[in-house]
Length: 77
Image (cartoon, rainbow, N blue to C red; front, top):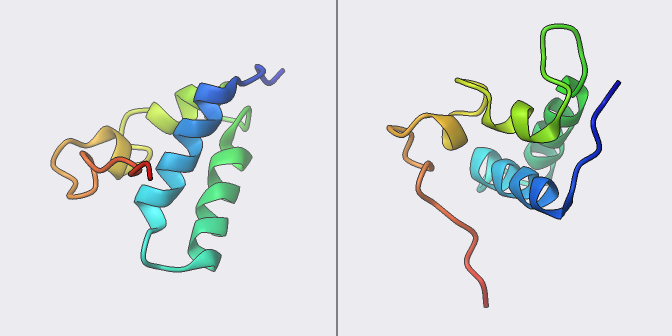
């Protein structure tokens, strides 16, 4: 069973997609989004959105501090 997610989880997913695919266009962002949501509950992956995004070495921009995108955040206008 897949655990429900809250607004913070969705915001973190958006940040992950942006950090992983920024500058690569819509198709790349769409692909990262599909990877994230296809992993939730899949064999060998966690059941929560948070655990998928923040899992060790899953998305380097989120989990690896040496990644150049690691400290980037969305800028609010």
